[in-house]
Image (cartoon, rainbow, N blue to C red; front, side, top):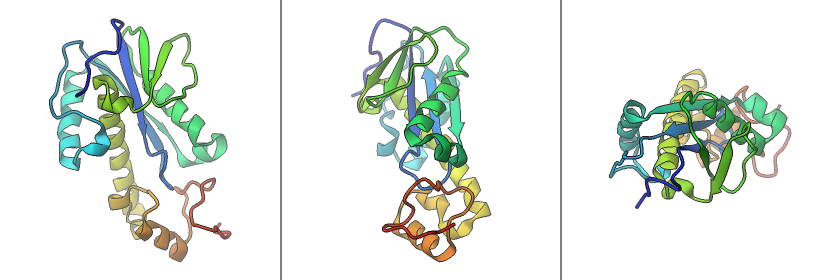
Amino acid sequence: MLKQKFSDKIEVGCDEAGRGSLAGPVVAAAVLLHDHFNNKILKDSKQLSKKKREILEKIIKDEAISFGIGIVSSKEIDKINILNASFLAMHRAINQIPSKYELLLIDGNRFNQYKEAEHQCIVKGDAKYMSIAAASVLAKTARDKIMEDLSEEFPQYSWESNKGYPTKTHREAIKKFGANKYHRKSFCLLPNQLELF
């Protein structure tokens, strides 16, 4: 059961999607909800069906005080590493929150300080607090749409279904066709990786 609040402060929940993917961007969301916001379907986006995530995406965007989506490309990931890219994506999402807030709730155990804002890292926060779960849904749905669009450009990798993650099908396609411009070259794209580029 998700809790509505971590504290009595005005809270923005933050989460990201796509850290473990071999291709495409890492995407984060930041969400500021009303204190009374409640939804019985809402939980960690990984535990929801695609249909439920899409229903919740509309509800969250309609009912949130404000929200932001931050995107960091695969090229940027290769330059600064995936951990820093995840933090940067969150910073870009928080940049889009115009409303006043007092505390950032970050899913996970680490974060790079955002300006002067106070933050609290919460392991498995997307399964504990409404605002982080809402951010989890927005990050996941935004990233899934990006990967579905990129799949039209490179259909041989089946990104519309695997979303760039290291499935057997995806790895077999990398083996057969090599990596493309959206693959993260700093990642181990194949086990016992040989030169691909």
